[in-house]
Structures are given as C-alpha cells and as structure tokens.
Image (cartoon, rainbow, N blue to C red; front, top):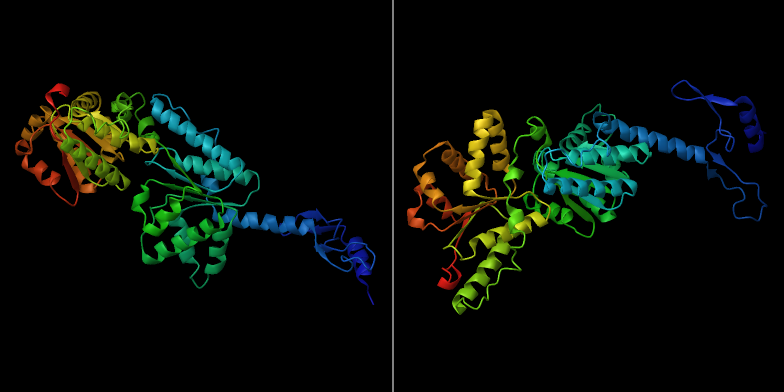
Length: 453
C-alpha cells in the first residue's frame, strides 16, 4: 500500500517541474510538492497532528486566477494612461478656484489609492477630471495586485444582463457576487444608465450591499445628489462612509481645444462677495422695522430650504439696499462651499463677455455659452436698466441672454436672478416664468429705510 509519504516522495521525484496552463515549465512547490496542502511533523498528541493546511502556493495561484478574472472584466487597458502623474493639477489658464479644487481632489484620491477605505464620490461636469482620477486609483491598485474592478455603470448592467444568455460563460449569480464582493469597485458615470426598473433595483442592491459591508468603492457622476432615487441618495449622502469630492473645474477637453480663450470661470465675481453669507446677513439691523425683520428671517429660512434641492429659477426683487445681492451671494457661496460649480456674475459683465467672445471666435463663443448654460448653479445680479434692452430683444447679446435663461428654465437648472425692476415692467415671457409655481420662486424684499439706501 502506498503511504502518503511514499506518494509525496514519488511526486517529488517525478515532478521536479510541472507544466502550467500556458505550456511553460514551472517549478513544483517545495513545501507541498504540488499537492496544494501540507502537513506538519508534530507529535500525535498535538492538535495539528494529521491536519492538512492549504499551502501558500495554492493561495497565490487562487489569487492570481482571481486577478486575471477581474482584469478580464475591467476596462483598465483602455485607461492605462490615466495616472496620478499624468493628471494636471494646475492646467495653464485655469483660475485659482479650479486649480485648488483639482489639487484637493488629487490629494484625496491619492490617499485612497494608498489605503482604500470607505467610499469616494467624484462629482462634477463632463470633462472636469473625474474619470481620470478614478482610473488613476484603479491603475495604482492593480499595479499593487489589489483586486480592483473598474467599469462604467451602463457596461456593468450590460454584463449582468448578458449572463442570462444560454451560452453565457458565467451565471448571473457568479457575475453579481464578484462585483458585489470585489476588494475595490470603481464605477464610472453613475446616472448614465437606462433607468429601467430592473437596472435601478439591481444597482441599488449592489451598492447597498457594499455600503452595509463598507467595502471600498469609487463612484463618478455628473449629476447632483438630489437627482438620484431616494434610497440611493441616502447611501451616497452618508457622510460617515462617503467622501463627496466635487471638482469645481471646467471641461478640460473644451478648454484645451481653445487654449488661452476665456472660460465662464473668468466671469465669476463671487470672490468679491465671499463674505456675504446667511450668517453675515443681519435681519435684525436696528434701522429695519420689526415687521421687516420677521419677514427677512422667514425669507432666509425659505432660501436655505430651497438650496437643499434647488430647481428652476429663484428671483429676488427689491430696491437697491434691500439685501437681494447679499442673499444671492449667500446662496452661491453655500453652493460653492459644498464643492460644486457656481457662476455668479452681473448681467452687464455677462453681456460684455458675449460681445468679446463673438468678436474673437464665433465657434468658441458657442462652446463657452454652452458651458454657461450647463453650469450647475448660475446667479445673475442686476436686471435693472439692462432689462429694458432684454425686453425689446434688441441686439445679439440680449437675444443670447434670453435664450440662456429660457434654456435653464426649461431644464430646471438652479438659476438665481436679482432685479429692482417692478413686475409690471417685465416682458410677458419673463413674467410667465417667474410666476410659474412649479419651476420658479419669487421673493420681494421690502424697501430699506432711506438711511441705508
């Protein structure tokens, strides 16, 4: 009868080397002699006597197969050039706000790649650098042989659906379990998927399981948090687990196609109003009457509530000195402090910008106007005398301004407008939009005392 030791001797003698699946000759493990398990030479009374232990070579082999399987699913080869060293933290021509945002996002992602814990939600407009940083994390982890799976959300859902095909190499449960439990999951472009009931439910189940187990996860999106369905919104908004990183930078691809040209960030005058916040807005100023104080306190409260899920227009009307610009800046500062894009500009500055860009390059002007149309939060200050020319619709810049406002109204994009012009002087198209209760909020601030005008 062949004993275990005798069998091991024969294997050791006859298999000094073995052939792997690729046809290459590899040495047999000196610990387990190719069995994958080993025993220890201990006395019979020892608790490990007779026990077989998995060999390290078996664990390495299993880990290698797992990495190969995950790598085959990922699209890392398509983004292998996206690294931390190739990420531009300070693109030439960018404003300081954008550069600071890129530096901070790079720092946070670099720390995560060194020690992946918790979740990162990278948010911002298309082309701001979200996917580059997510890819850099995945490439760094893959180089360190950490199991990391990177997919776009639409691609992930397509792969899960494909498992139902009769000739699918993997079952749905095999694919789902792999994605659900992989050490680090990187999902690009959340919100770009088709919103079928099946897709919504499977995506939530997947992310909810990883949320419960606190598995390291990186997600990119160009949607604001409030646009996700409530359950997913709750998981993504968990501040104890999720580090929300909002990249406040323009679309690099558009900018690089027109280097040296102005961007909407050049228009931004919010830095001139950085001290104008809700905390510094004094509703109890002595010269205000008690009724005014109570009314302004209520307005501030409603504005802060609107900012939790902002949609459509918000119009602040009142005489000079009533506080409308301060409150518009307070809204914009609160939005920017959360790391998101905001453009705060006077109407006159915006019109001048339109004039300059169209004179320089019509195609570039169209691209830059499109950026302004899509900015996540727009505050336009000072519809005063300018409003008269907008009413008449005279001139190219006025028509472009009206087109911009109409687009943002129809799209429900957060837009704050201040004006001291009385409603009866507004053009009908503007009146209808301001007083549309579904898409607009209107606040009339009481005239200030003569002493503060």
